[in-house]
Figure 1: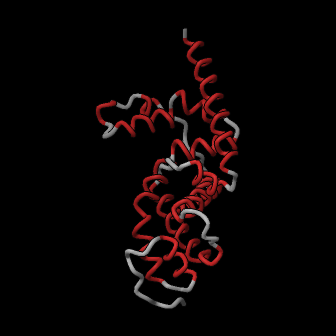
Figure 2 (figure 1 turned 120 degrees about the vertical axis):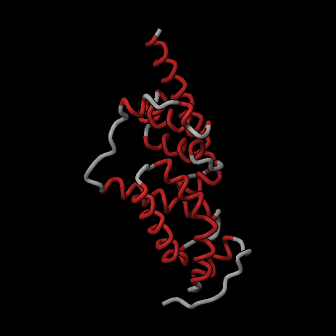
Figure 3 (figure 1 turned 45 degrees about the horizontal axis):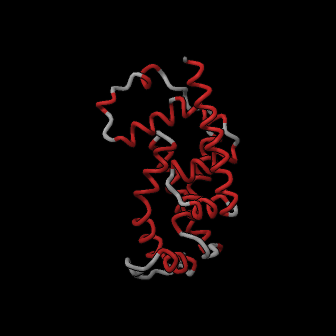
Amino acid sequence: MGMRSHADPGADDAALVRAMAAGDEAALRVLFTRHLPWLRARLTRRCGDPDVVADVLQDTFVAAWKGARRWRGDGEVAAWLWGIAVRRLVSRLRSRPERLAAPTAEVEAVDERTLSSAEELVLLGVEHGDLAAALRRLSPQLRAVIEATVLDGLTTREAAQLLGLAQGTVKGRIRKAKAQLRQDLISYQAGWS
């Protein structure tokens, strides 16, 4: 059992992780409260099953607690947490016996007026439109940098940290992915002409 303390809610994330590494449960609670909302939102964009998202969130913070001593301290804590969450989500989805269903006519016939934001409209297109097909055709390495930087909003530095790559490698893969996506979408649109 870890030691109890009263972590400073104003402490920066790095100080909280160091406190967690020393067994401070209050630091975990502060980090959890601070990062849960955005982690939930980003995971929900990747997976529409709220039970899976809840399980992944719990697994993420358990892993952060257990792995706090291994955190190197050379990157953003948010990127570290997101890396844990993404790996947990991918692992969870791979272990599910059922696969996510392909978009149905129901999804394709969504009334745009019911969407609460432009972001939801874009995400619907990313998940079910021409862009989704183009993203699926990217190699896993290129898709990972696009998901991290464009869909998840990480900087190239954060994405590099998350993916364990050099920042220059991330930038190069982004350029290559954008060029491939552009060509793929142009070819797709030309087929409709």
